[in-house]
Length: 562
Ligand code: HAS
Ligand code: CU
Image 1 (cartoon, rainbow, N blue to C red):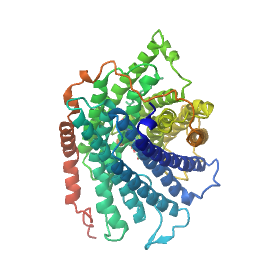
Image 2 (image 1 turned 90 degrees about the vertical axis):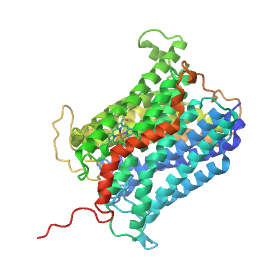
Image 3 (image 1 turned 90 degrees about the horizontal axis):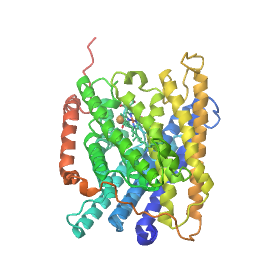
């Protein structure tokens, strides 16, 4: 039975969540190509340099926050319903959707206000040029922060719907192991609850009152710290859904089965434990945080590589198993026996391949000393376009080719475009992000419309600044084409009539080593949450306490008398 026929109500919710995420993807991608052409000097006719920050904020917020959150909500809704075999609690799940949508509209309107001349609304200029890492001293219209807060509250409510489904399932299936997909969703949500506390406190206690004029001063170090307390784990909130797809669906698409359920559970638990106590690796250059605590964050970050390295092993082993089921032989030639012409499979594999490169640039970012070389250069956008911009985004697009037919009952349309699309994305990203990494090493800054390196002859191993810029522009343009191709396929599929039987279904084959091989303690959420909180207390307790002791609103030492 097709998912949409078994769970019509849940399917409708997933469709709505995907629709919002696809609209955000379209607008965000448009902003992306505008700024890629602008900052490389290829075409500057769309916006003025003064509006560059507005476009950049729109790009970051719409793609990294709205596209991701709504897509993940849809994927998780599907995964819980699919693996627990039930409709989701309807009222809770829909309230979550509407709360998040209201927040999104508020945030989007305040950003767009900056393009249309910042009209005064409720006594404050309607603008939000604060970038997707919104911390003081940059200030936005209160509506932006209220919108951000609503998106987060909405995601909390969505989590409630997943947990409620588990409790219902539990009472009907006492003593059974939590199905793997649901286990992954709930572990991700627990990590999300713990980490969003930071940004919630930042926004509700400081930024909203400050932007409303209720308080005059905020402590930039404290709001940055609260932001990054959340700002690292949020990247795993994007990655773990991609891992859910790579672990549970990709092996099937390859024609095989997941290598090991226990390893998958260990990986997700490791993320729950270690995602949060590492946020200071975004603040290596911040004064006011003792180096020892930066060192603790660095050490934890290096341990946090482990779950991804385990994933590389498990996922590739599962895909290889699939290839051998299809008759492959040889050490590497099995790679040929895989369905590279199927967009869902090819997209996930190319996303994984790029993530291997993104993971390596992450390791470089994480080194406390080498970070000074790349911090605030365009190397960092190079890194995160490989991770969130490909590991997440390409996986999301690829799996939509497989999932959207199941939540609509409609066959995928425009197959040729769909087949080419992951490759266009891959090539565009390879060109753009490679040039961004190199340009970063040449010292070119991130987040500016006017990188003033025009006359600068960079004596690199190969190429010049001009050559890197042109690659960034070409890559950025190809990515826009890739996003447009995806949206054409989706629009045509969603608008088509239903007819014929589908060739895909959501059945997930049993892993080679199944849940009965997983120690039961892995499902003990209370234990892992307690350890996660303890690690956070060690990593953050003393430095946060000293920031608070410094004075919440009027930080820093008194002025030196002259
Ligand atoms: Fe990062 C900055 C460190 C992962 C996103 N990161 C950012 C920013 C973003 C971001 C958005 O330590 C910028 C924030 C801003 O605006 O300032 N990052 C890391 C490390 C990892 C890492 C150590 N990042 C991610 C992921 C992201 C993401 C995931 C989004 C989804 N990052 C940093 C640091 C900074 C930073 C510093 C601050 C820089 C600065 O100075 O500002 C690790 O988690 C990476 C581990 C990954 C691996 C790769 C494993 C390989 C796999 C591939 C399997 C292959 C398959 C296919 C399936 C070790 C799993 C095979 C195919 C075949 C054909 C065989
Ligand atoms: Cu990080």
